[in-house]
Image (cartoon, rainbow, N blue to C red):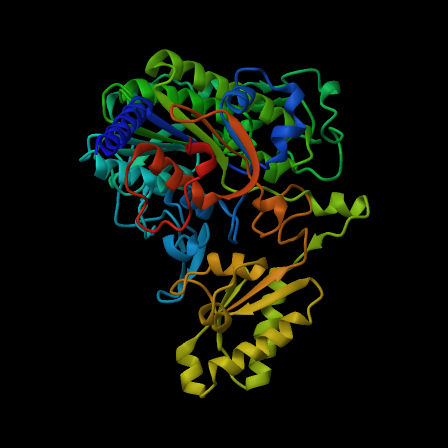
Length: 544
């Protein structure tokens, strides 16, 4: 009996210490950073150029998941941000693209677009945004519910979808940068009727205008040996400049490149995002009480630059060396404002990117370009001739074919027969790798291969009827610049680093997946998982 009492007492004492430790480690502020179009190898390739205070600080003192992947396609910005924060894939959260064809409305819809709300901070329609198309909660929403709405959530991103989807429907605010001729941070009436004073003050400070300056390499460009030649045939560049090469005088180029929009397509867009994020921490008193707050922070200039210059460009390398400084600035500010040990930061990406296929071809690696307009026309004509009926295909977009079921019924065409006919036709096209149908995706569960990724990205209500996959490094894009969207490792392999309160030091090459992030944060906070969670907490970082 005495032995039993000792065991029970020991267990209770151990449990109390564990609970106390958990309570002590619970952060006052969680900052989730999503870097748009960041490949994992940017960490390793540019490692020698990084400072000790940014990426290196997070990796050396935090936990680095070296084999972290998206487990679905398509790998785009909207689905990426939604998946990071909801702990699930487009199958459940419903954000199947940046835009997609809505077969019930016979029109394209934008993932964050909402005509029922009003812009705040501008009169432009750019403010007509909300997360209403996202079907599940984010971890930030669950924190709001857990704290009875006392814990704040602030979303920030140059792109509307990068600001809005992570913060979720219960957010106190989500701020996006409206460029063009205004250069302001704005929001929508979904969150508020008027900008807070600190945002007005920031906009009035002309901080955005201060970035109309010359972009030169941060270091001697000759030391950027990890990227290609500064002048080559694989980069886009800016209107008004003959070559895509340093230096770039943004003040001189702005009139031909969308005025304030050019800031986004430079590293200064990330500088501006950092400036605003620090102002938000101050203006909203984030991390200043006993209730955990969330800051969702999306860095998007890296994506604009990757699309313009390509992943092997010196411009992209310079952007990441500068982003390293942004990360260091955020961490230093958090140390001072919230207190070292009182906050948790995670950093990941919304997708990677492919090397410019034209460049790959130049070094004898397979790659190519797919003409989706030509493909759609030929497919429509083939189906019309094969079934002697026009309009059976409603739309072809995002690698999906949508049937018009009313026309099928009228023409007495069986959907299964149409599926098989289209599959056989598409597989004959040179640049096609795989084809899979709605029937296959809804009939069973795939656990490996591209079929599994397609299934995780397939929303039964919103997705199409036949899905097709292009050959590796084959894209629908211009011959300059990089893009993304596939289920191949150049698009799926993304960084994941945790740092701060509740995070032990270490690293792993065990596979982790993007939907694991949100339940890991939930476990760290001791709150409910997002309601559509399919990921699992990353125990190797959390368990003793």
